[in-house]
Structures are given as C-alpha cells and as structure tokens.
Image 1 (cartoon, rainbow, N blue to C red):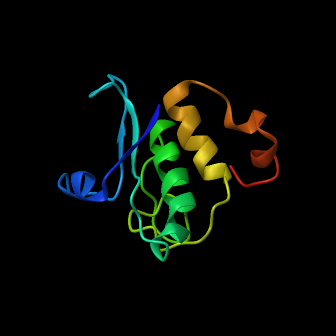
Image 2 (tube, rainbow, N blue to C red):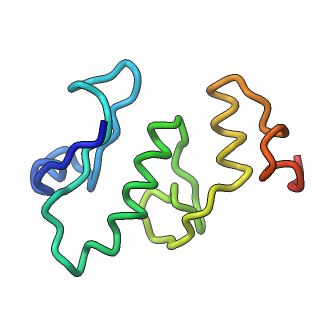
Length: 105
C-alpha cells in the first residue's frame, strides 16, 4: 500500500517518507508526500524507489545508489548488491538473477 500524506506530517517523524515493514505498523505500506512543490517533484521517483527498496528489505548504501540515505544520487538502477541483500533476507540465490550472473561474487 502506498499512501500520500502532507509532507509536514511525515517530516514530524524526522523523514521525507516512511516505509512500515513487517510487522506492518499503521496498516503497513509506504507513506509519501502528496503536496510537494513542482520544483521538488523531481525527487518523487527516486524517493518512491528508495522506499520500495526498504519494503523489499534493502538497507541504506553509501555512494551512487538509490538506497543512499540522503537521496543525493540520481542512480536508479537495480544492482547485484541489491539482489544479494534481498536474497539474504528472503532466502533466495542471488546468482540465479541475470543481473548477478556477470558480476563478481
């Protein structure tokens, strides 16, 4: 579930967006701001991808990454590192994903 909320309500929690994981709190899902200025709307896709990453058990990563905690990166690609992190939590084999078949283990 993805819900829109006024940015001020989300910022009261100290964030720009929030993902509630299992066990689902507040009904679960992702809360994104629904009142961004047109200038700030360019961050909506990276912010949404970042929160979807959290919903899939991904943690913050440094550097050029959509999972960078400050959302400074414009890199929105799914990488083998994301797949490995997902598989550690969800009991799957990262090597079985095509994106990981050509990267170093």
